[in-house]
Picture 1 (cartoon, one colour):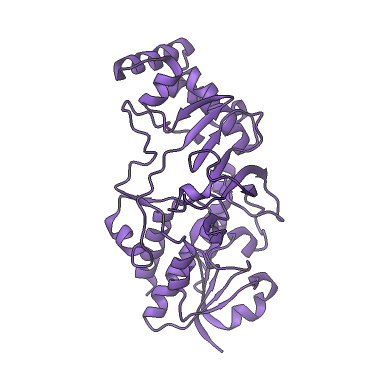
Picture 2 (cartoon, one colour):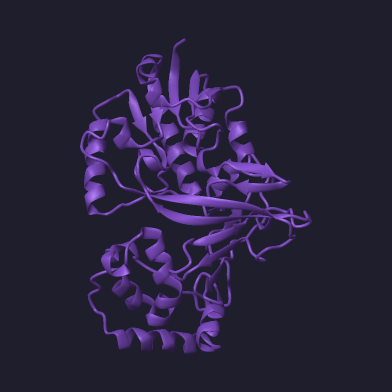
Length: 366
């Protein structure tokens, strides 16, 4: 059987393209190496609680068109992301705001907070930051850096902050208001009943093969479609011809607990280096399931990536950017293959940006 499009990967990018192509009468086949659809936004109902299997996904955007597009597939709640940072036995609100500054220094007014930060920046005397540590201190001072940035960042990247390039932190959001809303976007929420239903609706009526790895069936797959939309690793597609791109991975430990409320918040970040995980997610706080007499938590452990692990974060330093550009240039010479999404484009995307990318591509292609 011949298909107009083979879509490799059933995450948000691939599923949007499949949905839009199918609407226009194109014959699509979606293949997915995992045992389920949805990519990293997959949610699973466990004990009546929607569990975010691959880390917390909170939808936020200021783009009304994107918000209306995603809302055709699910009703969203009004969840507001207000993470808490835990440093030893101290708790701080994120992002850095007046509640944070009051807890750190006892300051009450924005002017007092600004003065404290400026004093610390002046004391550090850093004019040309040579690494991430110096960059962060030059932006927010030593206290915020040491308690809320240093340990978390070193765990996330697997390297000391003094060994990381300064460009990783271009800015650190500092707000001189008493507001714990993490995102500035106009629209924010989580789909009631989880994300998987969104992908199910997008792929309704489209042939999907699960547990089906493109690389195990490459020759056959290349022959049965006019075009391939590939959302996996671009370097792997080309058999690492120019070398391997680098990623960071994650390991998740999930527990069902016989308590109604474990930590009182959906997201608690652990910012000291000695705690091996970066955060604990308590899933029931994302959705309206607070009355269920159990709770489910997930600890997130950053991990060094290798070919046997899932790539979660791209490492967009100079070496990897140059390498990716070689693969991109190679792909542009092939009219049959199109790369999309986080791994195909080697770039970290928030969900709303994935939708924008996918819909822009739909306009160009269809």
